[in-house]
Length: 247
Length: 222
Image 1 (cartoon, rainbow over the protein chains, first blue to last red):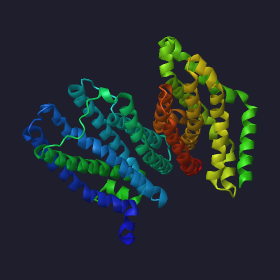
Image 2: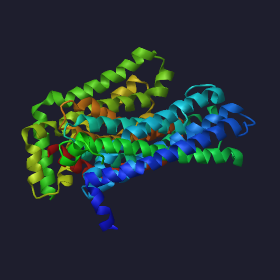
Image 3: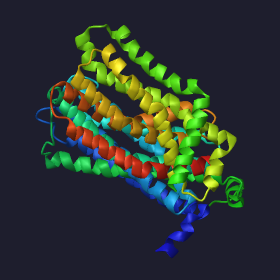
Image 4: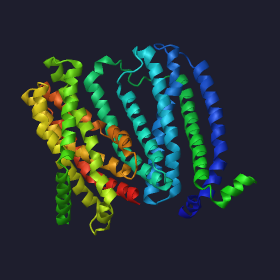
């Protein structure tokens, strides 16, 4: 496997590979999100309690899941970057962080929009909302740290260390927030629990999760390719790419 | 090896006591922040008593942020840090000595002035005792977590605000468990379990943080 993986530690190879993968992810994103959105927003039955406003689930839940998935991706990248000292892995961390932050932000905004009709308030200090907010703070810290270094090799390593520190901390933060919210104000929140979701609502949701996953990968690949080009801008292959000729 | 630890502690204590105001300023900041709250929200003892633990803990968090700059900055500028890296001892070990000294100079003073603040905020004895215990266990964790943040930002020119961005989200669990323990004590409930959780976090931080700090310092110094 190492023999197979090793060429991709070179910037040019992984630039080409990500270029080949990108159209697939873009295609998957477009098709699944069209199917998922049309099915979810038009054809799925309205919820007996929440009416049509539950349909925001088709954006909210996938965004929240991908916000976490992006962090897991970053943590794996950071681990590889620090243990095997592979520059490209650190670049992938830097490429994923803003995408993850935006997904977190989407999850928070849609969560607030959903909370308004359901809980009667834009914001409640619910455990999941709060830990999502803290996740956003951590993303911001990583992005800020990465941008603060002028030497991007050091920046990548520093951001990787912080990502790994964060990944140890995130479960602790999550559970502390869960306990905090249940002990402090469990009564004020209408607990939905996990409703047994009907299959005709579940299928579009699953499709939307796939769509958001592909979307996350596509955006990350685009940023990753840009990152490679910016960092390697003095290399001959990049110059050749810019001045003429494809790939 | 223990000799090296003690040497670093002594050296840091000596340099710190040359600049006594550096030690006292965060403590004064801590006291002033706590004083602002009664002025802002009114001095009704019942209200103050209820939010006292939260005020004191948030103030302690902010005060510790202010003092972190000192942890590595001077050593970074005058090259001591590079010398520490060249010694045959593990950097993580020497760094834990520095963090320990930092706690002696910032965490302990906060513990010493906490009775004064407890009287300011009309805390009763049992609640104060819980507050003291959480500060005793919690402030070393703050020093260790902050050490990671400082080590990452020490080479940057404007690392101060970034340090708070990095460190504050990570220290949220400490704040939550400490204030929960103090609240439980205030209601006369057992709070040993929460203290034990804080203690577990302290042990985890002692185990892992020095290595993270050492790795970050290597990034910052190179």
